Amino acid sequence: MSTNPAATSAPDDPILTTRVLAPVAAGGTDIGQREHNEDHVLLRPELGLYVLADGAGGHNAGNIASALATTTVANLFETTASSLIKRPEVDQFGLWTIARRLSAAIHSANAEIIDISKRAKKYHGMGSTVVALAFSPEGDMVHVAHVGDSRCYRMRHGILERMTTDHSLMVDVLETHPDADDALVERMPQNIITRALGMEESIRVPVRSLRAYDGDVYLLCSDGLSGALSDEQIEEILQRPGVPSDHVRALIDAALAAGAHDNIATIVLRCRETEVPPQRRASNRPPGQLVDAPPSTHRVPLASAPEIIIVGVETHVVPANSANANLLDALGRFARLRQMSVPEIAQPKPGRCADCGQPLDKDSAACPTCGKTVERVP
Image (spheres, rainbow, N blue to C red):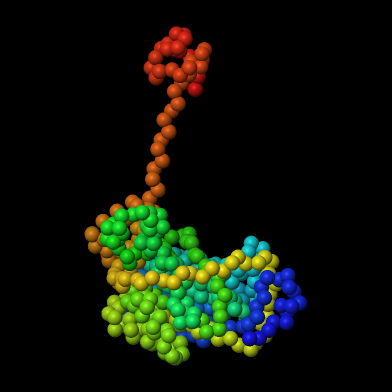
């Protein structure tokens, strides 16, 4: 492990990078049993950026949405690269600069997809999920952001962990109604997401910042892969000897053999420690404690259509004609579960006698206590 001489000269700085990681990565997509391939992967090692997007919209719209998602994120990273070196690793709010940059890039992609869909009728309603991973320049921090159900996994010491939580109807309902009847939960459609690029002007983009170590393996994938293979199957494939390109091919082949109906997209990165002396940038505040995600549980394979459904103030089905009446009825029931209960209307307080102050009956002309003619006090 290389040593950072700058670390000893500034002991008050909380970011003490002692190694530089250079990930080795590969990615790929497969059309699966779809008519169009609407998944995109982007690998930009010179930017420390890796992005995967799963589009939807039918015809060419889904392909446009996922391509916009990946290229817009990369464009923002390119245009801000020179200014990044002037900023601290962690800002005065305790937030990682790269994490904020990654979130801003995904917000920009959302705005771009919405703008294009408004300009051209054939792209109206298109959307895309996204999962992105960004490495801090010449350091050992990795930042993971996602919208929708495209996932990030990490394998460390042969154990696979899920780094993201799907933005799905199932997760939303169980977060807000953990005591929901099991029979109702069992009937809940599982392939419905509640967040995607292109669906709403304002979107929440969660970002996790994690310490990376030599030998860590990260997997980004669309639901075409995670819906066809269990976490245990993915773990077994990533444990096999080989380079990332071998694992990408093996994962796609396994998903196809399992009968995957959807497009399949995956990126595999293996962290490799280098002997390059790290360049540490000062930080304004120490970061919060980094907490790893718990080991993931088995996921039941999901159906592949409809591709995207957003349940919020409005329900968006992409493509528009892909949901049947039974599914829409189920969505209505589950959407009602997520609505806030209507607060009870407070009953008006009874008036009081202006003379003795006692409560008055609603329609009485005289105070029942003192007998005076009613003069009500609110």
